[in-house]
Image (cartoon, rainbow, N blue to C red):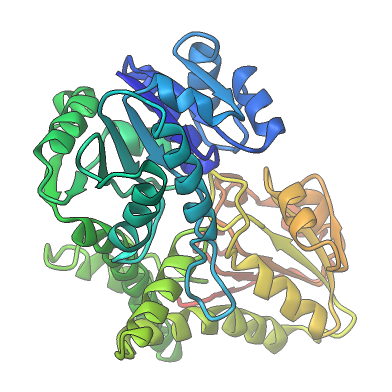
Length: 433
C-alpha cells in the first residue's frame, strides 16, 4: 500500500520505517529540510534503538522523505503525526494539526479516488470530528466520507523500545465514524503486524479512539505516582518499597509493571497528556482529583531527592554529580526529564552541578542553555571530587559503577532509580527504600 505520513518526529519516523519494513511504500512529509535530508540518507533524526537500521535498509527504496505535500496525491493513506504541544494552561495546541490538515485538504481536493486520512497525533476527544473533519471539508468542498475518509489510530510507542512496540503491540485501535471502507483499509495496512503478533484489534468511534490514548497514559502515570506515594510512606518506616512492590505485583489485578518507585514520570507523553486531559476535563466542567493528585506526587519526588541530599551535604557550594539527563534510558529525549527539576533545584541551593548522560547531554544543553552546568563525558569524570551524587536515570552503565565512587570527595549517593547497589564506603540513600 502507498502511505504518506505528515510529520517526521519520533512517532512519524518510527511508523514510517516500520511500515516500510512491512512492505509498504512510504513517504514522510516534513517542513524541516534537515530531517528530510537525514531520512533520505538513511539516518534517524531521533535516538531510538533499531530505527537507524530500518532507515538505512529502506531509504531510497520503500521509504523517502520530502517537504512537498504533492507526494500525498500518490498515496492511498495519510497519517497525521504532527505535534500537539502544551499551552501554558496545560491544554493542547492544535494549530499544527489544523495547518497540516488544511494543506492536506488542499492537496486531496485535486486527487481522484478514495483516500484515508488517519489521525495519529494525540488529540483530545472531539478534535477529529470538531477540527480535522470540518477543515478537510472546507478545503475539499464536499463532505468527508464521500471520497476522503477519516479515522483515528492512536500510538502506544514507548521511547527506547518503539520499534519493538510497533512490531509486537498488545492492542491496535481503529477509531472511525462507522466507516466500513476506512476499517477495511486499516485492516489491510496493519495486516502484517496482526498476522505476526496477534494483538487485540479494537474497533471503536472517533472520540473513543482519541480518549483511549489519554486514558492509557493517565492510568499508567497514576500507577507510577501511586507506587511513588507508597514508596514515600515505606521510606518513613524503613521499609524497602521494592520488596513491597515485588509482592503486590504478583496480584494479577495489580501487575508487576510500572511499580518501580523513584523520581517519577516524564517524557513527551505522560506530562503533556495528563495535563491535556485535565485541562479538557476542567473546560468541560469537571475537575479530576485523582489525576491532579498524580501530578502533585510526581512534582514532589525531585524535591524529596534534593532534601535527602541536603540531609548529608551542605549543598551551598557543594560539587554534585548528576547521573542521567534523559527522561528514561534508551532515548536522548529530555522532555519532562526529572533531571530538570533536580538540576534547577541544586543550582537554586547553591550547588555546583557536574552532569553526565550517555546520549542526552547535547539535547539537555540545547534545551536549557542558561543553566550553569558542567557537562562531562563519563560518569567517572562526573564523580571525581564530587561531594555528592544524584542518580536520575537508570542507565545500565550506572549499575556497573563501583570503584568510580572512590574518587568522590565525600561518597554520598542518593539513588532516584534503584540502580546503584549499596556498598561499603558509600553513604547511600534510596529515594523510596
